[in-house]
Structures are given as C-alpha cells and as structure tokens.
Length: 594
Image 1: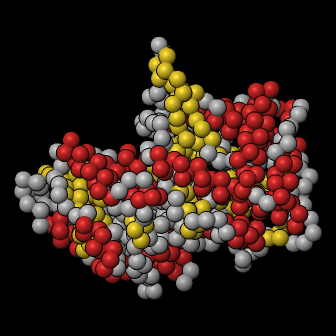
Image 2 (image 1 turned 180 degrees about the vertical axis):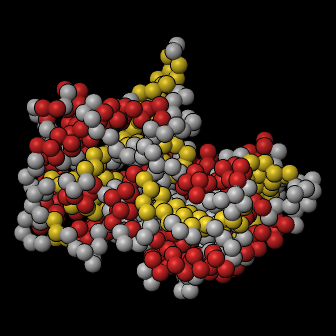
C-alpha cells in the first residue's frame, strides 16, 4: 500500500471518530531514538525512512517535519506521496505544533498515541492548544488501527552483561540509584528508557536492530526492583541471578497495573523527557510525583575505569578492521566494480573477525560522491552505486563489542579530486583539529565549545545543519545523552570520564559530502589559580587520507598535530596487523610536509 492510500485510510478512521487531525511522531513507548519494527508507525505511514521526524495529517493537508540531516533524503522519499516536507529550523518554517494550532478550528480534536509522546512534549502541546481549546485524544493508536500486518513487540531473550565488561555489579549500580532516590525524596523510580535500564540491570538484548536492548520498563523501589520485560525473556537461571539482587521479572504489560496500585503517601520519580504520557498518567492522583532528569543518565555518562580501558581496546580493534577495508578498497576499486553496499559488507566481514564483536552499532553510511551529501544515506541493493577510481567515498560506521561501542567516519580519496573537494576536506580536518586540541575551564558545555569546530567553516561561508558531536554508549546506544557538541544550547557540564565524538562536515547537494569523525575522552588537564582545566584524549586511531588534504591551508601547528596523530596511529595499530597491512599503514601514516 502506497503512502497516499494509507493517508486516505487514516482520514477515514479520523472521520469515523470525529478527529480533525492525527499526529504520528517517531519513537515508541520508551521515547527511544531508534525503535523496533512494531513502533515504526511514522515510517510505515509516510515512506520516510529517516530516524527523526513527525507526521501530521489533517482532513485536508499532510506534512512531515524533520531536521537538516534528512532534508535531501526526505524530499526524495516523500515525492508523490501528497505529504509536504517542512524543513525544521529553516527561516519561516513553523514547528509542527505551531502549524497545527494555526490550522485547527476552535474545539478541534487531535489524535496521538499517548504512549509515544513524552510527558514534556504533551505539556508543550497542551500549552500551545489551550487558547483554542483543542483536545488531544491520547488513548488511541491511530496508525495501529489501519496497519493490519504490524510486527509484534519483540520476544528475543535478554542477556546478562558480565561484570568483567560492565565494571560495576548490578547491586552497586542499584545502590547508586537508591542513594540518588533518597536525595530526591523518592520511594519509587520509574524507568522507560531502554539504554538506562539495560545499563542499570547489567542486561542487554536484541530487540532493536543495532541497539542491544531489552524491550522493558523498570521500577526501582527502596528495597526491591521490578523489570517489566515478560517471563519469556529470561531463562530460569537468569531469573534466579536477578532475584538474588532483588530484581523480579514481570510481564511487559503489567507496568501500568503496578503503578495504579500505588497508594497515597508514596512518591514516584520519573523523567518527563523520557517517560511516555500514558505511562505517567497511570500514576494515581494522590501519589506524589517528582519530575526530574533520569537518575541513571548522569551515572552512566561518566565511564568507570573498566569501561574506559575497554573502550580504548574496542576502538583499536575496530580501526584494525577498517585498515583492512581501506587497503582492500584502494587495491580493488581500480580493478573491478565495487558497490557502496559491497564495501559496507566487506567492512562487516572484517569486523566480525575481531574478538568480542557483537553487531554493527548503526546502519552504515556507505556513500560515494553526491550520495554522501545526504547525512544519513544508506546504500541499497535495489539501486547499486559503483565506486569509481576518482572522487570521494564516505564511510560512517561503528561496532558493538561486548566491551564497548564505536563510531568512526572517514572520507577517502578514490582517485583524482577537484580543488573544491580538497578545500572542503581540509576545512573539515581543520575543524576536527580545532576542537580536539581544546583545553577548557571546568564548567564548560558542549555548546560553549561547538564554535571551535564551526569557526573554520564559518570563516569560509560554510556550515553543517547538525550537531558537531554526541556521547557514545557502552555496548549501548551510539548516541548517548546528555553531553553533546551543538550550536543549540545545552546546559550539561562536560565531566572527566565522558565520551564524545567530534564530527564536523561539509555537505553539498549534487556534489559531495565530507565528514571526519574521531571520538574523545574528557580528562583532567591542569588546575591553576584561575581554575580547573580539562582536555580531550583521542580514542579513535585511523589514518586521515593525506591525498585529500590541501596542505597549504594548514598552519604549522595543524600539520604538527596531523603528523603526531598519524605516528600514534601507526604505533597503536601496527601490533594488531600482519606484515602486509603494517606496510600499508606505514605508507598511509607517513609524515606530511608542506
């Protein structure tokens, strides 16, 4: 069924229930960035496959709102659907709720699945609609009513994540959370976010592609904890292990009945940004509720010593696999046809050979030429694109290992480049160097430092419509809150032990896309009479293609950084490689001169 027909059927459903609009956000009942197949309602309805976006259907109009990462992709995928693209954050473009408030008449009714909209989002929506008395109906599943072959909620078994990888026991983590609960005056802590509860209980799963999660809710009490995943998700042995730590497994759908039994006099804490509206609404009115940032978020964002040691290891393993891929590409592309998809699959084959490899950490962006201008492009077997011995090839990819997660991007010169390509590649490199070498006063945020990466771009009239970097989870989500480098305000203070990427880029539709991405560990630098200063330690060691660099654009300090970085790349990776690959790496990391 094509999107036009799906929208028509949805409008029939709306008319039967006297609905004037229907909102279909991305996400699931856990407010996840990436959701399982059961929850991909917006994708199913519109045909837009990007990870972020909101569809709004009225009786006479239809729109899709998404951010700058997906403008090119969304334009193509929505073509012919009758759904208009609204480019978020562009001048003159209203947000979807502003647009809807302007479209709907007084007293209108709008349907949205309340499970998939956070408490904070619902409050914002209610405030926008208050003047016109627009009613949000949240106890329906509009798309589910017409999606007849909808996939089931995953039933894959959970896995216990060994303490030798996690660094802290389940009980130690629960003690930290209970101490935070006590400080907040909470008797219960309700958890919806899958990355948070998987970290807390030292469990992992395979319910969501590229995200090693168990589909579950959790509630932590003062003495006990409940994991609402379903009894079928754990073996008797694993149930016993969890029970010894005071964790009881209950059915997935039992979480709302549990909340409804809470009595007056107790207090419940939940994160309004990560808790679905319907879940929070199940808490009885006499119960005192505390809305606060998730207690686990701050704990897991600062990696422990075991995690840091393992993260250093996984980045080297992943880089060793990519050395094999890049050598193969250099040697193979001039000799025979190689598609974007084959290059990606070759990379997966090499990664699988590394110890403790679990799966890719996201769908690789394997993009040649103009395709790389789409920030979240995916290669397709249905539309194969050949790599040619000229121009640029971008690979943004990563791995989950039992002992960590990686995210790496390199852009390779496959042959002759234009002056524009070399100029843009070099500007990206200058941006990476500027931010990676920063020393900064404690108390700084990612928004404070973001300008360091953008300045080389802005000096040349360029910009990229996305953030500069994000946190990375630990055998968890590749985009981890709360730290990030972004032009948008972010109040989170950068702390020692946090992991964050730096990945500026240049994206020119119809021409090329260029991105270089390294991952940084925040560490102590020096304390002086003027304060405590922090710096970054590189975690990712992989050659940056010297063939694409216009060396005349580099300062002596930038050139020194590049040569020092490449010397360290060789020293760290050479012991992991055979003689043939060491020789290749030696050439790729040779000192660059003006």
